[in-house]
Length: 297
View 1 (cartoon, rainbow, N blue to C red):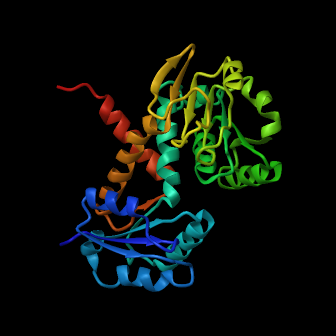
View 2: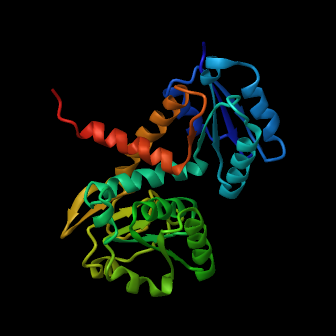
View 3: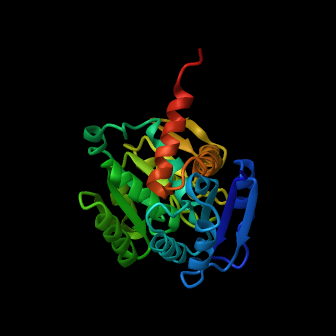
C-alpha cells in the first residue's frame, strides 16, 4: 500500500523544503494543502482517517507546518480533537522547522554537557537568546525538561515571562527565568550553554560578550544568514574548539536536524498513532545519536 502524506501548511503556499524532505523520507504520494486553519482542518483530517481502515491507517500520515507558530498549534489542537479511539493517523508537527532545529541544538549540546544525567543537568545553566521565538521557545522547553536552569532572553520582559509561564504550565518543576537583552551580561556570567535562536541576520551576542562568558562550554548559533547571531561563529562550525568552549553554527547543527526530520517522517508510517512534537522529535534524535556513537563491527 502506498504511503500517503498530507502536508498541511498554514501559509499561502506549502513549504517546498518540507515537501522535498517528505519525498526523500519515503512518502510515495504527497498531498499538499495551504491556508490550513482550525476551521477547515477537520475535513482534511477526516479525509485521512476514513479512507483506510485497520492496519492500513498506518500508511497515511499528516505533516503540519507553516511560519505562524500559534496558528500551527491551534490547527494541531483541532486535529487532536478530531481523532477518536483507533480512528486516527500519525502526525508530525514542525512549524518553520522549529521543533527539529531545537532538538538538533539540544543534541549538539549533549555531546559536551551531561544533559542525560538528571543530577548533573540540574547544575547547568543555559541561556537562550531570542528565547521568545519559535526555535528559542522550544529549545528552552526541551532544556528545562532535561532539568537545566534556563534563562529566556528577549527584548521584551513580558514576552519572555509569558514563554516561561507556558513552559512551567507544561512542566511545573521546570526552572525557567525571563531576562532582557539589557541584562544579558548578567545571565552570561555563569552560563554553561548559550543558544542563539533569534531572527536571521541579527547579532545577539558580540565578540566581547562571548569572551566574557568564561564559564560557557558550548555556544550554538542557529542563524545561517550573515551577520552571525553570535559574533565569531561561522555557519559551518561544528564543535570547533575556542578556548574552553566549542562552537556550533547553523550548518553544523543542520545535518542533525535533517536526520531527525527524515527519520521522523519515516516513523510516521510505522503505526497510526504517533504524535511527534518537539519532545518526541528530540527522542528520535537521541536514538540516532546513540546509534551513530556505536562502534562499527
